[in-house]
Image (tube, rainbow, N blue to C red; front, side, top):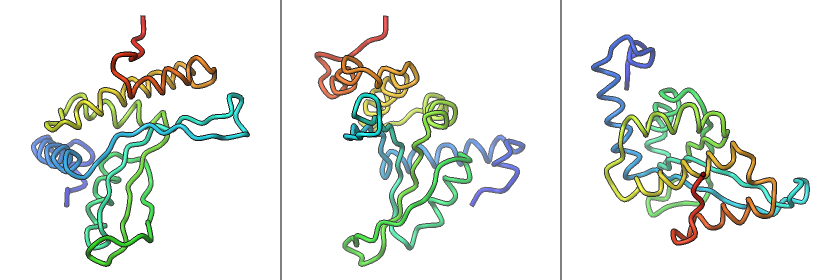
Length: 158
């Protein structure tokens, strides 16, 4: 568990150690996703939701709390579905576009992922940028989000 000084960046060595640990943990247990949902209350009829998630069983809930404290954003939710250990699953989620853009993305740009997940992260960054440009508010923009899954048709900002 990190010290309060590490979270405040007073102790740079401790912060580097925790940062490396978080990168490794997310490489194994995290996910960067973008979902598109039908939503009749929105102008376009769809909602685009980029989300950073780390999942753990109940026995390791303290790990998610450490990550949440480190980033200073997001929430932890219980998923009553049971895994092979017969325990509740918990999800640390960051969905606020501002937090994703100002906290999560800069952290993982400065602290590189090592697995194939780095490709998912790059696509995720493009999706967050597109959302910040409000591309999700038009049919053409929504198609560009859908195209993120097809690299041959990937949207690249001019």
